[in-house]
Image 1: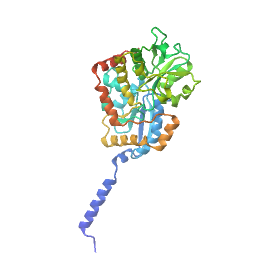
Image 2 (image 1 turned 45 degrees about the horizontal axis):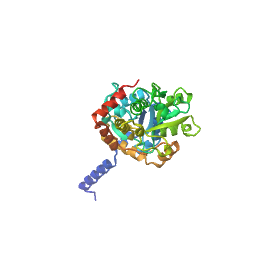
Image 3 (image 1 turned 45 degrees about the vertical axis):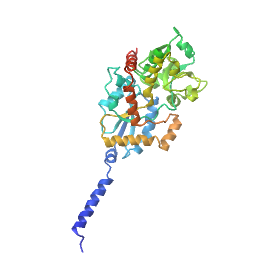
Image 4 (image 1 turned 120 degrees about the vertical axis):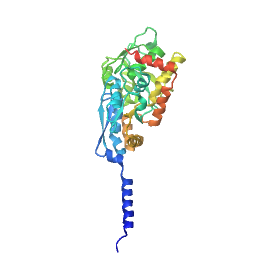
Length: 350
C-alpha cells in the first residue's frame, strides 16, 4: 500500500524546515574565506603582538572557521588604518582593525583635519585589555640629562627627549598633556614609523624616553624591566592607583598641579579602558557583526589563547562592545570646556 500523498507532503515540509534550521548563513559565508586584521602600527610592537596572538586563535570561534591573518598598516600614528577601515575596507565582515586608543578622541573632538571617521559608527568588537592590570608608563633612560622625575619637572630644567610616531599619536598627546598639567619638560621627536623604531632609537641612545604600556614592554623589551636595564619608570598614566609592581612610581593624577589639570588627565585617560581597540567597518551585516562580537568574547576565555597570552606577559582583561560604546558616550558627553582644551592640545603637536 502506498504512502498517502498528504503524509508525503508533511514529510517533505519537515525536511525543508529541518534543512533551513540546520543551515547557518554566517558559517556558509566565512567557510574558506580569510579575515584580515589591519594593525595601525608596524611589526614588533605591542599592538602587533596582541593582533598576532588573537589571529592565532580567533578563527576557531568564528562560524565557518575562516583563516585569520594580520596585515600591518602603519602611518600617522595609526590614523591611516583607522581611516582605511572606516572608508575603504570591505564591510562584509572580513576586515577588522586595531589602532591607537587616542584615535577615539581625535575622531570625537575633530582636532586633526585628516580624520575621516566617526568612532561611534564603527562595528565595535571591544578590547583584549582594559589596562586593569596594565599601565601606560613614561620610561626614561638612566643616563638621560634629567635623572629623576623631579629634575624633569624643575622649571627651566633639561627637557626629556621623547619619541613618537606622529603628531596626534598617543605618545605625543600624553607628553603634551603632562607638560600642560604637571610641568613635565619635554621635547618631542615625532615621525618614527612605528613603536619598534622608537624602541630601537632608545636602545641606541638617540632618544631619552617614551610613553608605552607595561604589557608592551614585557612582550617586546623585557630587559627594560630588569634592575640592570637601561630604563627606569618616571610615571604611570591611565591608572587611578599605582600599579602594585611599581608602588614607588606616581600616577599622572598625583602629579597634576591643580584640580583643572587633574580633570584633564582623567578625561584623557578615559579611552584607555580600550587599551587595544578592535573594530570592523560601519554597516557590517548584523548577523556577521554579532558572530564576530561573540567570537571575540569567546577567544578571550579560550584556554589555549590564555596560555599563549601568559607566555607573552600581555594583560588580558577584556572589554566588550557595549562597554566600548558607553565609554564613547562618556567622552562625547564630557564638559565642553575640557573637551576644547584637549582638542587644543591635540592640535598643538610640534
